[in-house]
Length: 244
Ligand code: MG
Image (cartoon, rainbow, N blue to C red; front, side, top):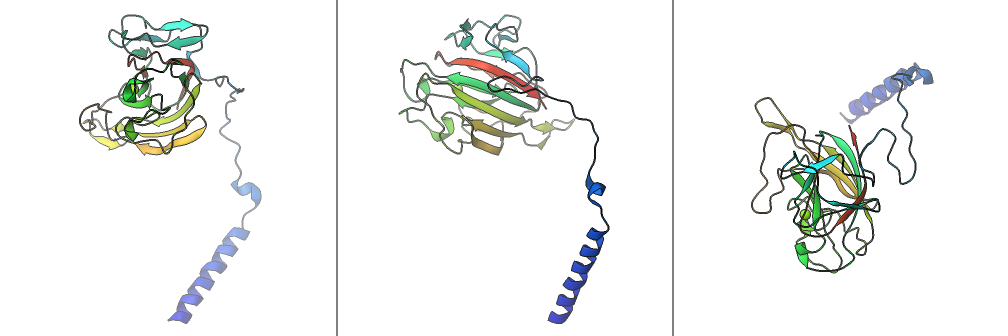
């Protein structure tokens, strides 16, 4: 029996080697499609990105409370800052799958604790919150700290910075897919770098990120990016998106 198995392996190996030697290098090289070119530079959006906030204005944003009204946050010296109690803001445009870059910082003045310190967030398609929070000496539930998929999945680690220092989030988002009957056929996923370090690697989205209760599955199409007003003066800059 052993001899038969060894002979079979030898035969397989010989066929493999014979098959490979039939190829020339160019047989597995191709030149189409012709790829478009994207220009890149340090600290700049790629040339094909949609600038959601480039320091000048909030033209790409509206109020989430009433999307017929303009976004009412503060823009000063190229920086966007939450106007506490004015409500969330959201992009005019809706998105499906995308690459998103943004930079944020918590207020220099430390006040509040736990979820009450430097809290904001980014809602992907308006439904799934990636948390923004000042984590410095500020214990809270781990699936509610900065970079958590809120109350679902903590980040792989804490890539923190001091209050007032700028953080970067780079997010690759694959939206959940639903069939025509509204049944989930593929869960959404998030891969994310926080300050250049991987904190989510194909994290599966279980549903909406609820403050109270379990995630809810609801069928949806394209949705906006929402930035959260959690009553803290968190600031943003250099926000861009590339639909995928
Ligand atoms: Mg939040």
